[in-house]
Image (cartoon, rainbow over all chains, first blue to last red; front, top):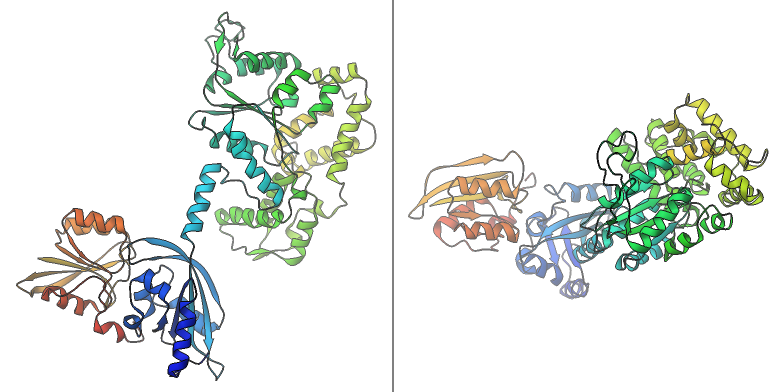
Length: 473
Length: 117
């Protein structure tokens, strides 16, 4: 585009074109003086094109991005486009979010003779996104894949009712976060959200924790304890790892779900509660029902509304999104100037199957950020186990389930009650491999379970459960 | 009458919320009394600037773009605000003391800024 003394015809054509653009457009000379602004920009700034001509851009634009034209000058010097988000103050005294695209305009000599600044008003989009996020309560959950969008759309539907929800999905898929999002979106959001890990507490303690106890109910019960069900009054109680809930407590939970009342341990007075129950598990509850490990009536009572979270390997494009998110999250506190991953690392990370899903990906990035000493994360900074042959997580899940299916019923029940033996184990196959992996991780970390769990890409609870299963505890 | 101008180098600062320097002048019968003084803010902040304007008992504020909430606050405090002014602060000061500075005005000096400014 010629910038030097355009003919009247060219000039008319230029402004006509600019005015037909439904976004702000400014043309600047090499001194950053305004040559033309379009009618959209006139409305935004309140300055007429004729008055604005010849004035330095920062005084008309009133943006937060340009410190004395420094950014615009950088574009002139580098001859590279700049795309940056910022805000401007309009003639109506509103600060609006905009997106700037600054492009150099080359003259015949091949040097930049000016700039074209394109300003897109993104305030409506931002406020819509903000509103949507605050409405959904899902601001902490990342995912752009169609499968995740389906999950996001399901949240307001599930939040609308008081019916029980059963969230299923592999470990690390975000069951806890979705449960919290459902609570935050529901009308109970002003009331407590209480999370209970049914697999983390011994049976006797769990009953007391859930339903509370009366003073003197057992040794050490020196005063009344309300219990988590009562603490969650008017709110939501989230029972995670519901598949690990002992059978005796399943009966009590079923009666609470039916009657909305229960007796605390050792108590003589019934307690009424108004709570919503959300349960989650990574175990196949239907199979556990068949095996007699989970009560059928409780399963159907919980399984009113079902949400199955997709594993990370099925979420197209989300791996890159999460990698970028976690790299920012971990590099900022460590003050490391890490810009991203090398091409090879990205290939390895996107090809990996992530049996531990988002939790595993997060741990991999945390490891890499800590190890990396360069600006980009190369494959040397990735955990070594990524390079060993992988077992398909779907096969793993099936392998894990197969031994449970093959053993006889009494044996299995016995194995749940007594965690020291391993009748469900097979001497070879995945069980043995997994046991070996656990032993290896424990050896490496000198018995530190938290670190071992991190290496294995599991939560501490999962490791604890597996230690019990393999009799390693 | 006490006048406060939000400034950036020799010009009226384009934005009230990003201003880190102000000029305070006393004016009587369309004449500036004494030498105007500049005040440097510790950091750009609309709230701190509003507090300074109140503390200094300013009658008129001359500034660039200003957000509605701060404009309304100053108006509520009975302070005259002449906003969206573009140009050198010296010209703006002359115009305001002369009583002909209006909101949204582009002063003649706005088009004569030297390169280093």
